[in-house]
Image 1 (cartoon, rainbow, N blue to C red):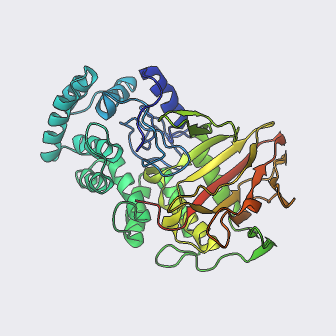
Image 2: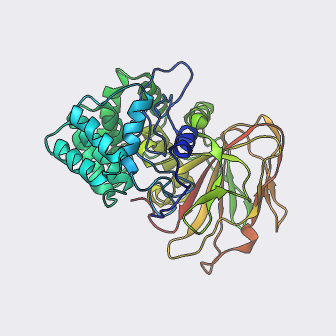
Length: 408
């Protein structure tokens, strides 16, 4: 995972954390959020997940892996954890955990980690959860998704509510460990009894026509718009409620679309001027995962081949300049799935610049196209652009799909 980042200040981390934090919705009680950069706590209607104690930004691509960029390095997760509690006007329930945060803040990260690990060995829930996040992100300790997932499980069993939600999400998706959709749904039903956000997820899933594994029993028929490049439109593939759910899930976390500068830093994307919100692994709740599996079915791929789902927001004047999604490599992107979440906007068509094909989907439509050719190399005819929005606001869910499994 790339390190480096936005030079140094806690203020920068707080700013970006607040921008990416997945946990806010109007009128919702404070709960917890995912493992983005944030070290603030705000609630989320759709994602209502885990308390953020770490410093990582999840840009377009694999959450927490190669395309992620650490923003703060030397004091890493423990310091930010302490800052998070401080900003909330709270203190960790266990005094030694507070002491560990204090040590990390003063630069004595190794000593803080020693205390944290000892408390986790003793089964202290907050310590287990904090260690889970720290190991999931990496920094003071080597990054290890499987070990992080197991610690989320242990923290859940010790009674940590945010860890329970995180583990439910991972169990539903099969990230970093075995997938068990029925067990995840059983856990979600229990969580829904006391958590309105989880109840909304469950209600949405129950309206889906899924098999026992969480896959769609049937998918919409596609309309082939082009053979070369291969472009297919699936009309009405998502319901209005599903589109609204994704828009609500993404709403609190929008920030400028970013790319790496080749030196481990993230800069404003000169090609894509939209704002983006990534629904990464820890906040990919069972409802979002079911929608990702539908995108996989529509594209004829496995859900594990996809990157984290992004929701893009285009205000008037914003656009995605001409580009190709194919990125080469041994396991590069070969397919793109775009779900149109609304249609109350002018302009904003998807234009295939080499062929002239122009597509403007209705709410719930999904556009799927390949960016590789028969020879496995980039199909130059797949070059496309998101034209400028003229009026209104366009919302689009985007998922890049690789040749083989991409998820941990």
